[in-house]
Length: 244
Image (cartoon, rainbow, N blue to C red; front, side, top):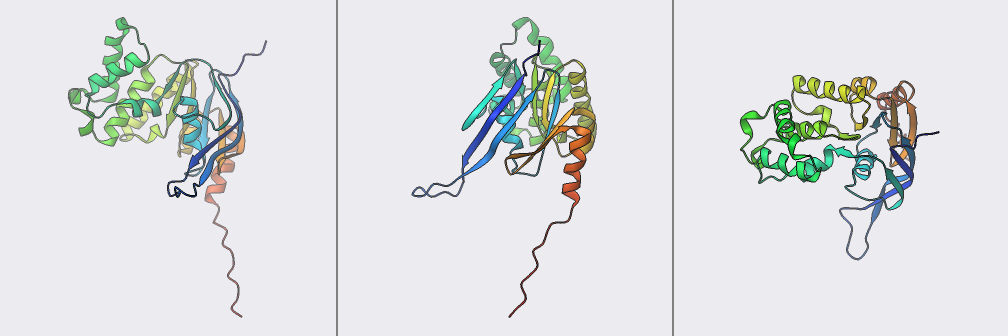
């Protein structure tokens, strides 16, 4: 008996208004077009592509932050999306109060919260800033806290958007180690990254997006070299027309 996928995109389209559209003549663009793919439990998938290709939009659809304009996104299991945790954190609350708030959102049992809180703070290395409102945190500090929270929650699917570039090299190494542990424990991981090394070590498959469409999808060893080669190729320059 085939196990149903944890995530299924069926002919998914996502439309956004352009920032400069006129009230009299609205303009829109398709961030994603005709996207079809599925993810099985325990798989690790890397989304690659240039900025604006739709990687973050795909993760936001899975996280439930936004909805598809057309098509269907099906999700099974509990999600721990870093992107929605970061957006849920309040700047006027302290790290402690924000963690308590996230515990309520994810219905974390009261008897587990004390130990979870301790491990989250220790991992984030923010013990000295517990009672400081997040509005005084740097971007890196906020991201470290969000990563620690997201990856410590009990979930089936973990969604991470460029989170492996957070903090200094030691913290990045520690964060990557945690993701490898999650993968080895059978968790499903979907992430975006510009690091070929991280993708090679963590991803089972790569989904390459270009202008909102799937350019290629398959095993990391097959797709990542194609994407890397496309980025190293010199841009095609149209020859100038000779003056008459």
